[in-house]
Length: 515
Ligand code: ADP
Image (cartoon, rainbow, N blue to C red; front, side):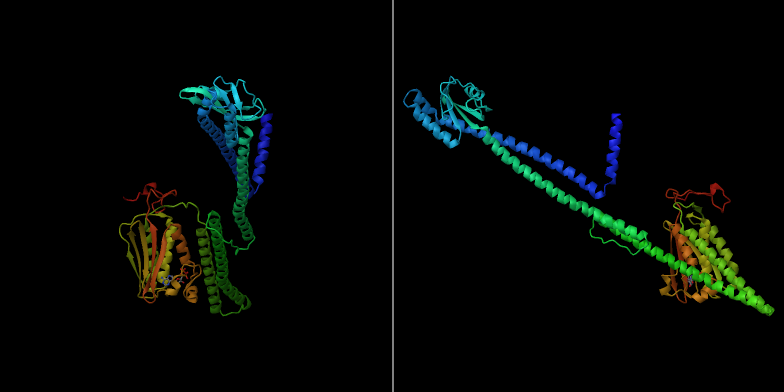
């Protein structure tokens, strides 16, 4: 029952705590910690200082008792042998009492009061108190007690008056305890005031710190909400280089990339629509002409139909490329890759191109070594890379030219090269040819059936294989594309390995790389 109530209470506190803002929680924790620390420290230091003060008073009084006792030795002797009157000695003691602001009582060795500087202390009374008994026994001891004559608390010390080895009397010194306490209270007041000031300083610092953390986070939240509402140009001012500043900078970077990505997507959609529109317009115009002129001469009729067919074919190819690209851009976290032996793929692609090369009067060459290390990836996608590059090389190489497909091992990589002796690419265009829909000669490329997506697809595939694609070109001399892929290593490949298509699904074909 009790534990149930306790649990409900605990859950309530947790919920309340969770609902507080970060700044409030930070403030509460920081304040609690600082108050506990300051109070504990103040308490401990003040207690220590009080103890030290008490000891200092006791020590000081004991020292005075000893000084007075030794100063009194000859006077006491004289008094005992009646060479000096007790009134003289009392006057001397009163002088000492004034100097030390204390009460001095002289006792004989039988612990009986001889006289005291304070008239309230009656003479000839036995005075058996701890400090005098200790002094008689040669020890030092102080005592704090209620004074039997005045009923006030006093600090008492005593010292023996010696004549050579013999104790001839005792000097007792006392001061009111309130004097010690007044000093202690003064110290405590200073400590408590300092502690209070420290807590105030802590409140100010923690408010400032909480604001320093909460304010940029609030700005970040507001900016994130504005971005979510479509205002992609939102940025947060970066005012520090700490974690909060780094977070703001990372947020800005993310917003920047998001904005750029969305801009690219808009551009892509605009370009794709534009690419789709021209064959569609052409088809519509031809179809309208065919419908409106039933008596059209047969050759014209046939030519129009051929054109409709060609444009429809272009549309189909464009749709295929767009589908390809969208499939590649939705990259899975861990693609199902397998060990791929490149030579069969390169040879198949080359073979596919031979009829076209022959028709175009372009010589095609193979420069593939007998041994190439395997790579890790998708055979179909890698084949598409080589086919696209060879297709481009053939498209841009005039009759009499040469296209070479090569491959070589370089350190931990395999480099596939497709070079031609064609028209080349102007330096200004080289940086853009991998962008979607970018074409050096738009009209010519479109006529040749190009969509401007071939190299974009090549780049996407190669990057999905953790490789790179580069190009060098010289106008009028030729172009070379370099596809660099990391060679397969059993210990670094994490993706599941499925049987290769080339070997009819034989799992034995999954070979380990040679050492
Ligand atoms: P396309 O479908 O138009 O060929 P790509 O993305 O494959 O589109 O290529 C982009 C542009 O790069 C082409 O329009 C062409 O101008 C240029 N290009 C690509 N490969 C070659 C090459 N081997 N020689 C000359 N120009 C090339």
